[in-house]
Length: 107
Image (cartoon, rainbow, N blue to C red; front, side):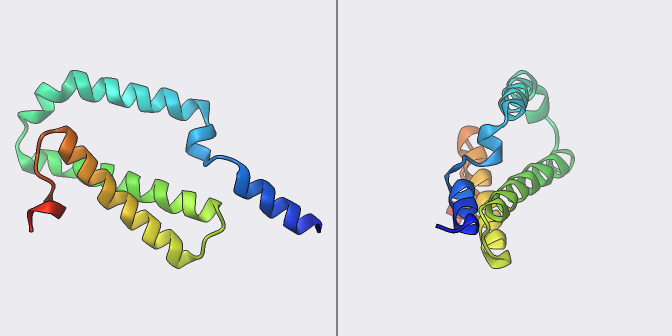
């Protein structure tokens, strides 16, 4: 086995950066706690005020999916597809957890 093959194998067997990072777990917990405590306040905001936060969250899902794909040495097309699927899936999960029928399932 060549050195390049061993490096590829090592990269393929390590967990994604988000799972391996201790800071990620703390940030995810803190974000969930803030969302739970502020849900009453944020739920009462008009859609025009909530839309930028929604767009930022979907963008974050997309970026995390694309970075994970690039970290796994996928092609640019693979990164775009995984980022898109991550954003759509994240939006659907968010809507289901908040009790809203997801837009992707309405049509």
